[in-house]
Image 1 (spheres, rainbow, N blue to C red):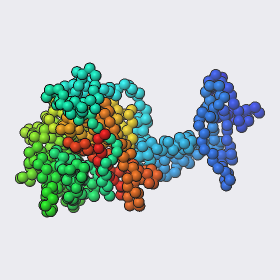
Image 2 (tube, rainbow, N blue to C red; image 1 turned 45 degrees about the vertical axis):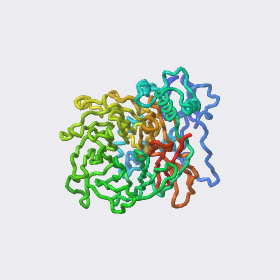
Image 3 (cartoon, rainbow, N blue to C red; image 1 turned 90 degrees about the vertical axis):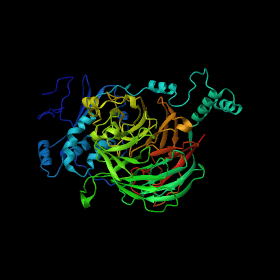
Image 4 (cartoon, rainbow, N blue to C red; image 1 turned 135 degrees about the horizontal axis):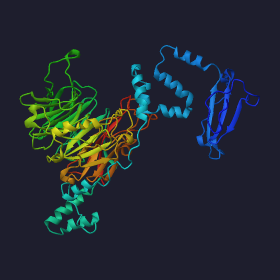
Length: 608
């Protein structure tokens, strides 16, 4: 029976066609558009080998429909032969997984260009090349759900400038301001007023602060120190006289930076039980001791005195019995910090726990399982007090702990707002403000006075609103369609624009001495350091990748592939440190997706 005019038919041609209908190619115009039918015989379906044949590149889709008069066009192709028999033969093949059947179907329906684009999708690639075929069914069940998304409000992203951030800047909590002035004075005018000592004492202090705050780093490297292994972290001491750099060869290199423009390397210490890399390091308040860790439960403490050549001390932070292979302990340490008095250490572990350790007595004071996933970062709220501790976890939350009440294993409060795991947290050091970096490509500013109570946290279960897209920051590309505002977000300001991928990118407040903590800054996977005002407006971008390109010749041992052409240069800034008084900023950057030992640098950048 012929299809009704205006309808599209998916049925094969009539078993007894007329002479007119028996043509191999026919077309029919309907009210919906043109439909071409082309029936292929089994003989025509078999390709003949032609050594002189060269496949032409795919043309753009729009070129194939020139002159179609804006009408819909559909092409139906039917393969002759017994389709039911072919399907039965395919189903009878042993060892064919659901994913393989899906790939076979996709190959029949897509062009070469479309197939390549689909294969480059991180969600599909991670499954097609996985080692466990038993996960095929789970992927096929979840894949349609992951791809069929409800459109989200395009205006859901935080407004810039942030109203809360503007209030903070006007309050004076983050540096001086000149909002009361009718017109902003140029930097040259302010410097002239400083030299002439114009105004009263208060005006001079404000003028000096505004001059310092207006100076930002530039993208020209004044000094480059090359390493043969990735540099994962590094920081200046509070007085700026000391700098340390942690690299993947399980060594910490110490530098005398009392002369900021003339660094002197004077000591290197090692971690003997390293796994993958050194994860973190912390300098004691008196600059005499350096604690550093790897993905193990042991902490090494080394003296910073160049005349002390003894081996580092070892502290075991796992108070449980040995277990596992060769009696190994049960967790690794992601983050380590000295307390304000230098007598205790606090650590965040891969066992979703915090450890408070007394250095003098060499015993664990508290081991609290306070999160449901890895604790990637810990810090003290006040550098002068050992009481308030923050912890940031892959469970997307920040928790506040009172050192005096940790015996009941209950947090004193919590911050929620990230929808992916946290990579780092940093305290302003005043016991009030805290900064966090998240895998949701966001950085957030928090006020401890707005922390959520424990009872409210348990009633709301904010972790239930975390993203369930299965995003893996180590190899995936974050889709902004996955980002949304957390319904219980209690942060003050949200900063966006950088990329938190491949590794645990770190963020910091700018120094209180030279900038009055006027800015916040973060490393980024794209090889840049992003600097924001407190109101979430970008104050500057330092292009580390551009500043360091071709600064070291490539050879067979120091090659950086970055899934690019051999010899190309790629990097990400994992950590950065702003000198407390001198106009210097140092960036540390490891490789990502590097299969061979990489060419890594620690760079110093100077003010404009």
